[in-house]
Length: 406
Image (tube, rainbow, N blue to C red; front, side):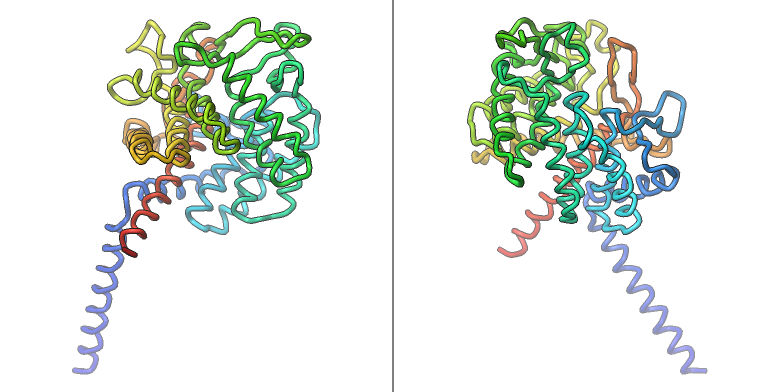
């Protein structure tokens, strides 16, 4: 009997000890890790409800709980597999990896079809690019190289830029939008990893033309640059998804911040870095007091205008990219802290969806002038939110390791 009591007491002490260790480990988790934990669980649960891997989340209409799905031709098709790859990267969960592979495979036709628009980078690099980065799957590499060649067919050497919307050629002989800066990374990657070295020149030229004509003297950007396709002459700037042509459309500004920072990383051209910094500073200087941009900084209805959480998430990633490529420690700290602030606010109850619906973030705005996707969850907000969380989590881990080894 005494032996049994001793065994029970020992077991109880051991259980309490293990419980304390578990609680200590939980307590040691950073706020970013806690948000990543919650987000990964939610992504996994959502995946189980998406039985068909060739339909992709796009947005959640007001009053609804589940994602509205689109097919592979939608410009947002690559973001959901990208979200899954980020969740797998953090969790190493085999079930999430399987889902990421399935949804990534479904994007493959984009690489081997005629280019309908510039969004091939969003579709393929966010899906296959993350998959290849994490797995080294050589079949993914082949798809990415094919996708880059397909994207390059939209390049007009007279203008020196990629045609964004061939379907609108009758309206604009050649049009290039600021979003396209984000698709250049696919071309830069393919130039380094494949045989078509011309892709580098195409990407560099496109960034240069965008910098010269779409970045405005007031340090904001046009949404679209209209060019003469036969002479290369710049005709006019338009901001279709913003309040007005000369207004500051929030998401467009963040495409520029992030895209030019990547262009600098890949080329070493300081003009690209300076452009990214100018756009970033203008964005930060014009932020409202609560730290999250309205959909357009010049909407006369402010403060009664919708916010755009997606712009804040993209801005966080862009700021982290700047911090990663600058050598000046003061600038590194400035842009890292700016990114942290965006992520902290997005991680609050004001923006995390919690049990409201399947998304991670609330309050994004897609195309306000058309009245679509206003103040709703949108998949690319979740994608860049996960990217920013992971980048900050890795940064925290590296700093912790540096402290421990010194």
